Length: 219
Image 1: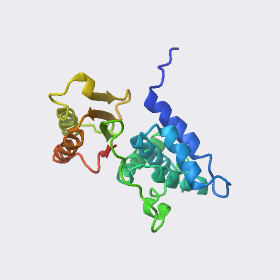
Image 2: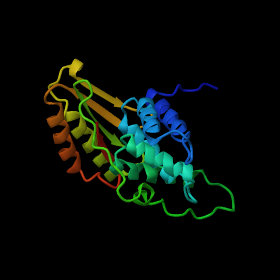
Image 3: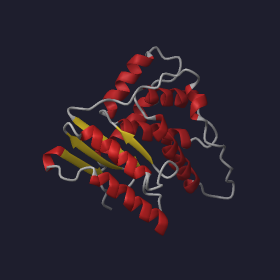
Image 4: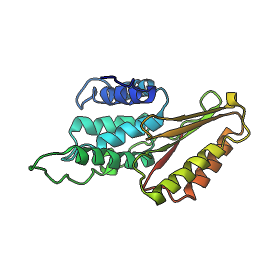
């Protein structure tokens, strides 16, 4: 049997999931130290921070353990976009439901309320600025969009994403679609990067694909 190697983004997600669970409540490691480690593991990919936090949130059908709650708070403090967590939480819950087998299935509890986990006054970090002259935009998760109408909207959204790079030379643009079809990311280098990203967000919003079916994460 042959195995397909994991892509780099998947490896970051696995490492983040493991690292975030290393800091249960009561440990001597401070929040600041834990957040610094998670940022290093994420390699600046706040979209993968949001994915990992969302999957953890949704994949607990009978409630989160205290350690998981702290892990989610730490990932948000490390930069995970709160708005991007909800679609991944629904994806995590779908994975749990689809994996259940046998006659003794139990009805999962509602997905925990992220606001309750974070608590009042939790400091939400501002989106990070340009990284080395680059601005990025990810749209995710996309694989679960099925049926003719969803496929059409998905195509429109990705088309709007790619149009932001029109006229750029190869050295000033980056694009990546992960192997499982969950996430598509573009990068733009240069002074116009931020303006092009804003325009892409507006165009994608006009497709009607957001916010229930997917989320956008600029970074």
